[in-house]
Image (cartoon, rainbow, N blue to C red; front, side, top):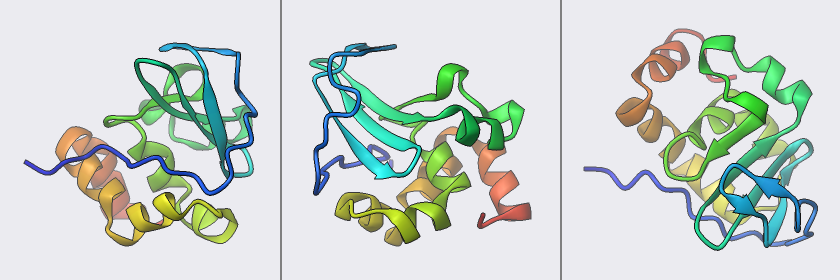
Length: 125
């Protein structure tokens, strides 16, 4: 089976979400992947947080409540829908590597076949 976890190593840890609550607990590290697309970590888990405008652009059937996309699998959704935006605006080497290796595509294929099918039909975005 393919390891579908994103490696979150960010060039700039800016703490935009530090101390705030996430679905996984209080955030103790965070940073920006691209404007409106952030990563966060808690002592036990983490994921991607997209702002309201980005979350609204994800098709309703694939959207996560509150714009929280957990790090093991759901992280692939914002990476699929905002791949070009991330590539143009990120300084996060791990995100660029994940996209270059198509980890977001493989994760969607393994865990969210309906998202993968949408990408195959309409993507990349």
